Image (cartoon, rainbow, N blue to C red; front, side):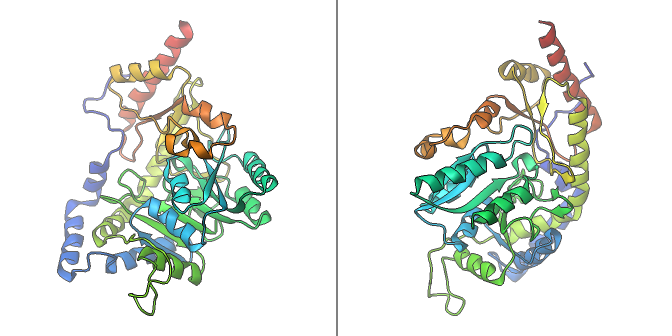
Amino acid sequence: MTNKPSKSICLFDIPSNQKAIGQENFLNAFEKILNHGGYAQGPECAELDTKLASYSGTKHCATCSSGTDALILALMAWEVKAGDAVFVPSFTFVATAEAVAFLGATPVFVDSNTETWNMDVADLKKAIAEVKAQGKLTPKAIISVDIFGNPANYSEIHAVAKENNMKYLSDAAQSYGAVYEGKKVGHSTLADMTATSFYPTKPLGCYGDGGAVFCNTDEELALVKSCRVHGSSTEDKYDNVRLGLTARMDSFQAAVVMQKLTVFDDELKNREKIGKYYSANLDSSFKTQKVLNNCVSAYAIYTILADNKAELQDWLKECGIPFANFYPRPVHTQTAYKSYNTRSLPVCESMASKVLSLPMHPYLTTEEQDYIISCLNSFAQKTKAA
């Protein structure tokens, strides 16, 4: 095996990002906020809205308090409610289905594609047909997830949504900065609305919780903004005309995201280089995620499928390599969501038993990556020889 690096390997590495930007830049931005006193949804948030909308190629962006709230706000704007069916993948973080259930609607779980690990379009069509045949729920919306930063099959899913007179929401919590057929995730033509997260470990992260909704019409923007502040009216803030949340982004988090935007494109290039290097050099016994043609993953999390997962985890511990399990239980198998579990989802259940996430961040050195790869490949060879 390759020699072990002298310093500890990080699963994520936020301090190196802060160092690359320069701590003084953050402090200067924070000082401005302390001076003007607009701490919640202050001028930094409005500035960030403009920058993110421009970066993504969409008409509007509305920052908010988290990626989960971004999903809820989008669904609220579409008046998703009890009796509605919203089709979601099960192999993802719980927030995707949680946003649906929170509004009283029914999450209908869809299986994963065996290659991309995103929502399987064939199973999506099957699930919609099943709901229509049962006649108990109204098919209202589809939420796809760009799992691990890898863009879903936007064009095919959007076509399915249009064919069935449904809305299409992209959960891009892990994929901000990714590219689908030449267009950045969040682009106005890819989905009806897009939600993203700025949680610290995301490709574009803040130093707490934060998120954003990307939308294409003035009406949707007005609804999202109203729902973001208790359902308030634009004419009278003390007249709440609909149900809403308190889901404002704070100015400090917006300032952090704007600082991180200054190095974001360089970091995305590094993530892509590191992700492709893993895929090209890992032993073929480890299944890796396929990125669709003409697409670029944001490589938020680099994940493999390993048949001998428990033994591999022990091996990585011996080697001093950190790892994580994203995600060991599909949402439809979790306690709070079992009542919605009416469909067979064999692909995502199989994947969940094998997933193992490796160190991935823009500051991972070639020395560190070569060591990780050599340890994994040594394990693979040892397993084959046994």
